Length: 255
Length: 177
Image 1 (cartoon, each protein chain N blue to C red):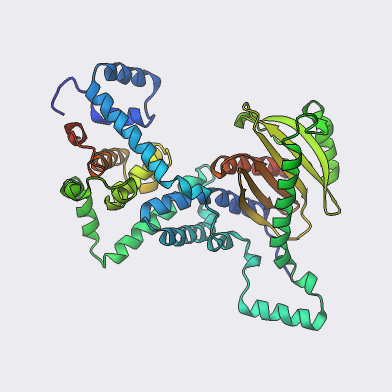
Image 2: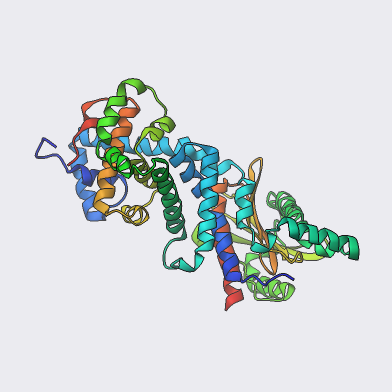
């Protein structure tokens, strides 16, 4: 830096990256107003940031490769050749295939479950007259109802801190089992639904993403329940919401 | 026949699954190669699951995973340079010089190839800050270098990137002390 009045470059970087507190920020902003060269630098860095984000944005739209998903499956899903051979023998000898290979079915069950969640979203989320059966004003009733249906404390998660207001819920059915759809809405009236039912597969599956045209579904199976979150959102927007919901659903179970 | 799988461990798996898009994006930007990136993400998750007892829950999961991924990547680089560990360090020290030399060949290079040409230790700092919006402190924790080093690497990476992208003008070459 040659000019004594020039602000330290480091302070400029820290400013560009939001590292400064309000006092320092104001100080830099005052300086920037009278230093076009510094202003141009900060602008160039912001542009770089945007260019870098744009260059790699498409990764969020891609499905997660199977090799990565496999690593995330609980250990019981890892089967060696011997396990498979033993299972086959068991099937042949005992004819109990449906039970013995229950883990194989769970992946397809989960996909079917995600399909139901998506259909339910398409049917009700675009409904203006009566999108829900039980409105948000009767939340206590809804929580009691969910709790009795699922046989454990279940509370409709509060997503207001994430910009989504609770609209209400609806009783549906998944195969022969009761299912619930909870609906949320953000300021621009984009709707998000959380679909849940009991998990009868006996398996657990961590987050999976599915994208259909504008709608993204994130679904997972925990030890008692299957969940799907559907919304007209990018996967990068939906995933943090799903993580938040996952945590909220875990909380009442623990207490 | 099946062992009960604790719900806390399951929760960690789901939380890691939620981080996969970020891990893949970071790995792709680091390596510049989609299949290398996915191998790296897979190794990272395997190591995280193996070492989950070491995860400090007061820390952000993303930072922990990024640190694992980054260490795997850097140690891979060091291995491939067949013991010439110094070359990586020299790269860092002379990086701005090198970037400037390449200027002529890269007048209109796109961002991806410009990033790929950057020395790894600069690249990771720029990516963590520009792509992931991480704070200098987080980057310092992930890369294991002091905040001051993070800042000087960042400054050089940004100046270098401007050159690589053909954004000429003296301001791009302004000295950083």
